[in-house]
Image (cartoon, rainbow, N blue to C red; front, side, top):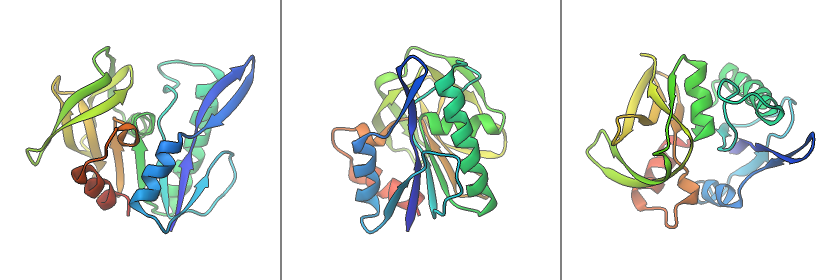
Length: 192
């Protein structure tokens, strides 16, 4: 399996951008699928991949319009279009989840309670402490989505696009000190 990962875009110096992927994300993906090949999707060039991960990092351009977010948005749109056309499963992590939700008309609000550890509740009754790093939360999704987990403040932390293998998680599973068996099984199931 080839897993394509869209990197975050960082500003290094004036008008110089740097693409980055956390080594922990690469390790996390490899732990789920040890025999997979990872391809970093760092340019708008047609690439073949069997699974797409839209990684964390960056803000949506609707929240902060700058060169790095514009560059990231172009990469996301390009590879999302390829994945959608080829019915390739997609996992959006934090920024990636915001990107997916935004494409389908989600409502967002600014928040200070979602930086650091906090509890979420899954609809199977399981509760989990997760690690988040975002300043915007999803307050409402369109009816095209199934909500799978909520934070205590009732904002959306985990969702799936109905009838498609497109998932969004607003936390960073790769940054957890220890990945629980529950999380490992969860991500193995959705990262197929």
